Image 1 (cartoon, helix red, strand yellow):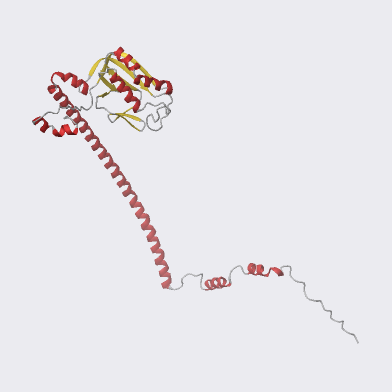
Image 2 (cartoon, helix red, strand yellow):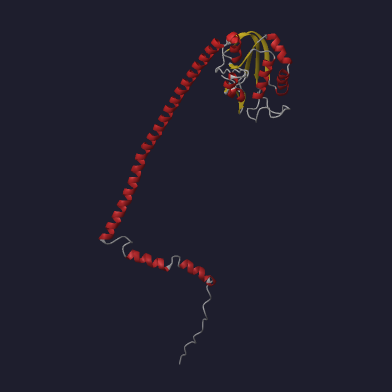
Length: 309
């Protein structure tokens, strides 16, 4: 009687190499959450998520039409507003041009009236100046003058810095080689002191009431800017005036500017120099303070220290 061979036990299967990475395997095998997977399957079964009822389809169509209308209206509004903005800009430019032209016309009127006032003041000065009318007219700059004199040219040093601070900030000449308002003041005062009868800078007539100031780097004479080189004409005894000025303290000051900063200067005696009249005439007279009626009428003028004009 045959016997069946005994069944041999094969033992448990060997463990998987990635058994220790079960969590990672689970993440890989289920990359999409089960809830999302179920929702996607349900949407696919219902027809891809599109509305199936007539009402839903009408609502979707109405929404699309509304969105298209909004976009169309926005584009149309932008297209319409662009010409409007351009028109407003052009209108503003036209208004600016018009107001600028009006301001220019007013400025011309002011200059014309100022010239007329100056002419009348000069005529009044000639009529009421008495025996010293010519002298007063000369000193006040009311009339143009010509005669022998000197020509003094003052210019910035070559390559001088266009920037910098105030004029001659230090007494030791430690600033740049630009001509400052203080330099021009000393030069003009030196010419007056040396015997000049009339002085002009770049065609700008100076009087006893003229002011030389600075505005940044510009030199102003009676609030009118001048540019270098500065040509100073002075009426007087040419040779004597030139020598006296160069020997004066102000002439030595100008020479120091030339030596230390390279400021260019030249002076020459001229047989005939011509100076224009002052652009604006200001005449002030003073009367001695008297007694009685004169004292009563001139009380305010005398107390303020200002004469009549």
